[in-house]
Amino acid sequence: MLHPLSSHNHRHGIPYDIMSSSASHLGEIFLHRGDLAKACYWYEQATEGARRKGSPKALSDALGNLGNVCALLERYEQAEVCYREVLDIQRTLQEGNVIGETLVNLGNLKADTGQPEKGRAFYLEAIDYLVPLGNDRALGILYSNLALQEVHLNRPEPAIEAFHSALDHHRKVGNEDGLATTYGQLGKTFLQLGNLKNAEACLNNATEHFIKLGNGAGEAGALRLLADVYVEREDHISALRCLERVVQIDQTYRLPQHEEDVQRLARLRGS
Image (tube, rainbow, N blue to C red):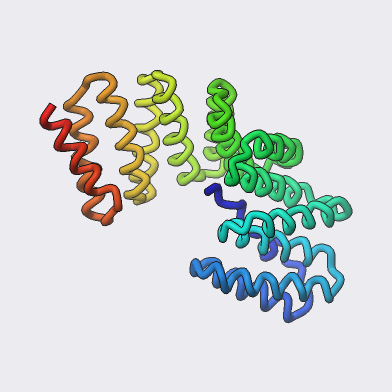
């Protein structure tokens, strides 16, 4: 699934009642621990506290956090209710970054539930808010997600354009993870289009960024696609090198694709 843009209540530094603030802090702690059920509970408490306090700003923040956790729990309807209430509140507060990021998250919900056209519409609306604000971090994520929807809708040219926009924004903020993932997605798109030269270049870039990050699973994913490029080009030696490295990574990180990769490597060696 497409992960929601991160919560924002702790960034603004505007306190509300102690109970809501403490609940929000606990929600953040459990979210970082990966305990989504407890994070959801505490963000619900923060939302209730903000309603009692009557603070639109605090309520917007609490609802945004609750929506993010519900999205990660795949409670899509509940997440959408939260995000739409954030937008209702923001019609008064008019915090452009919050509106833009919430629109991105609504787009993610539609993308995750197989509604690429609706997801795309939310992303395009978010661009109108985030571009004037120069929110490069959010725009990098937005354009990557928009590109994926264009791919699903079989629109390769706008997809490639959106991927390149995502890369530009990722570079501006030094988002190594974003660069690695986007290069991988763009490489896969070029591979599907039969553009092997560009696919090879993008996947090599993805591999380099994943190595820099120490992300073995990401490196293996890029190398599997790179092996596909070399197989298409009938360069079996390069394909073998990629798959040998993939199997080595599988063993190091105990990746679930290990057996499948071993079998693929054996078939390639026997061909």
